[in-house]
Length: 433
Image 1 (cartoon, helix red, strand yellow):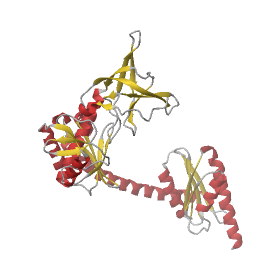
Image 2 (image 1 turned 60 degrees about the vertical axis):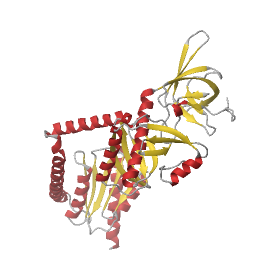
Image 3 (image 1 turned 60 degrees about the horizontal axis):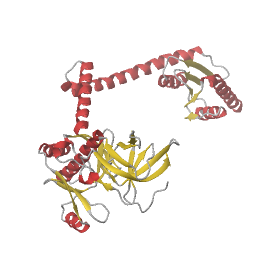
């Protein structure tokens, strides 16, 4: 059924009481839709609701609607999503339809709602603290499943500045200041903005709803909020990153902050146990391990270079020079690809008029390397690229060294193709000489 464009706007009960968990109302319109999986879903509008629709960075509420059938059987329908249309009607997404006029009792998922109120009120507090302390205005807010973020029109923020902001916000939380709402006209709101008593003002006409943190912040907002800052329970900054229009600050409040702190503690404890050191010594220990790791990596690379030189010299002596070409083919299953590449380069340089076709079979697909000594005139990249294209594959490289991947079942055929091409090109070059 198509909704009536003249449908009256839904009465928003959460505007007057964000702590309302249950309410009664009646179905005023029903729409049948199809979800992303092709299944049926219905939108119900009610004459009044306490379900908050997605708006202003705050996600929708969940919960259920209950109604009684004529025989007295209670039916409970889950509300999976809530949206608002341009006419101000709130639509509740459900999996079972109800007839227009059906009386319902709504039940809000209170754990989800209270969490959202903690994060949203915490965002008001954090944005106000950032403006007061750093003159960094908030331009957007996103309330996520695990963390929330605000984007600031600001340059880089120092760690010390963020510590001050976090401390300021938590001091206001500890003072348990009242959080109240009131309504003003558009003209009055614009006058407050001009006087610096509002941080921002939405681009809408009519009555403006203001959320006030006593003696700290006033802001226009239509979301759900706590009654006092103490109910935020604590605010913790988690991360800061540069974004296209400024800086993004990630934060958590309330029980999310508690869970985040517990996760951090468990990670620190597990890491300190693995290293058998106190948690306080982790930074210096990790720094030392990184330094040692870099030194060991350099030493390992030096040893690999030396081994490659020795192994390449042996490989070069194993193949005779025939018709002006020493062609060496090898495949390894127990050597990593980086070493096989290094070995191909060193072997080609180990003796004059040497070409190599090396394969690393340590993974799938097989990695093929083609290299040549500097006194040979063919182009490894061109030869391998043409060979791979013959099999519908891609790859290439420089004149001296090229590489490409090939399925294991095509490895032998590719090597034969490259081998024949190299031999033919070298023979033609000798004839021309």
